[in-house]
Length: 105
Image (cartoon, rainbow, N blue to C red; front, side, top):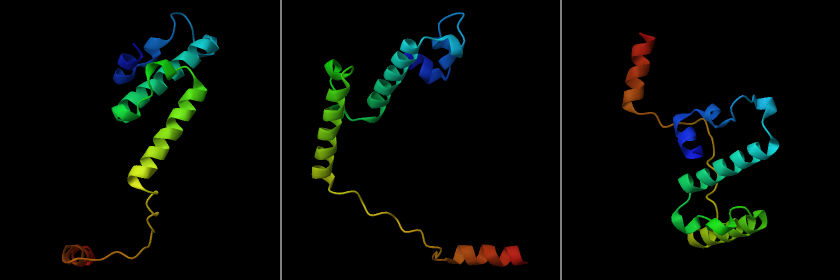
């Protein structure tokens, strides 16, 4: 149900009838956030990094799981790539030079 509501962009369909945002129980909001988190995992993680079902409601197990995933990624791909330096020097090409000449008239 949460996946369908998310895919249509109509999150308001999930609110209990007759309740405004201020009236929704905190437990419901927590369950909704948890469901959206799980959907995010399913949409963004490869199957070998997806936490098993039994673990979904155990925060300490999820933290441990993702530390293991991070360790495996670092072992497989190495350290994070160095940040890209943002310098204002760009290599110009003939197309840019022609466009610049046309703009100047």
